[in-house]
Image 1: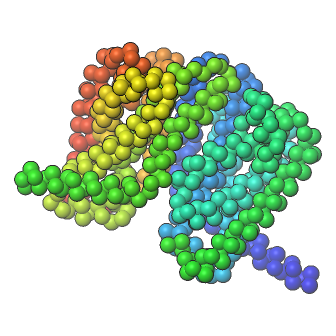
Image 2 (image 1 turned 90 degrees about the horizontal axis):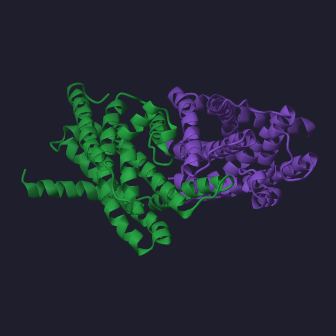
Length: 272
Length: 258
């Protein structure tokens, strides 16, 4: 029995690893897009900082800048994951990849998990580019007060975004439109997901304290800046983050299973 | 071909383009919501550092509108050419007796109409909320300014189309162009904070001229000399676009679509 379980686990892990490899190859198959990203990220950053100046914000303190950096990174993460999955699933639908995945008996969750894990490479590139842009534009070195907790929080944020994006992809399949949904979701989700630092406003702190989606992102900021933003002990924040990730994983599994059954029974293997 | 035939052809292309746009009504909704989401989001962020007044919001809102419609317009020509090439239709289009300029102009006019309509509908509540009925009346001449202002941007887009047909990865180029032009728009921040040479580039681009002229009208402070700059830009950038695209089309007619 134990041997059978180990074999099954090995099969699942090797399938995820294959999907991961495929995802990484796909992401780096267009080097021009990666170069464009590296060039455009600091430009967008400059645009939004200049816009703050347009609203009359004349001076930003070092702390404000550090907080702004993590806001920018969290927003990029949400955009990268949502756009990555939204566009990815539509492209796979158009190219017929999804049809092969479904018809070949491969689980959609395995497929998405591998593809999502490949996005980690993008996530780390985002971090490097944004941190470098801040250092160059504002002459401000990026703070990492608690690197171990920071690395843990990045892992937690990744898993949270992975399962959220899988659920979101099922919504895209249902509505057959990615960019409209993404445009709206990418503004709503970050607000509930800890994008805005609690330091700026009491109401925001309340959202970050009570929104279950916020803990991993808040933890990322806290570990980098060495603060406790929502006045909850760090071990408890870690525990809450793990609980919400498990809940999201179960919800992702449920939505994927239901979507697969619907697609197979209606004969819409390739979305179209 | 008689004028009536030309007009009928023009109308048919426009109608076709309109049908393509109408396939995604959600996209039109986003056009209306986006300035609120971005200008509102930035106002929310700024409100933690300073007091944001209604006038500040109007200024930024119009600025974001100008940036948004400008970026759509810059991408229109290049994306059209790129999509037609990917779909294998570009060669057929070039081979037909109908001039590509007619096709490009008709499709761009539809995009201009959609953009201006979105600008009008999205701006109505904000302008009315701050200036009342007089604000709505001032909004009318800004529609003409937006129409004129989008023409040079289409010219820039046509010039980009020349680059696009030589590239495989259009998205990469467009991502950089969009980010660069957004920063150089000068529509969401005071340009005096920029280095002098960047300041000069911003003033020479149509986004800043369009924004300042439209803003002056909405605020009731009248138009500045930038309106002449806008007229000159319209001629210059459209000519640049037509010239660049013309060269590219000649190359394609000789050597085929690569």
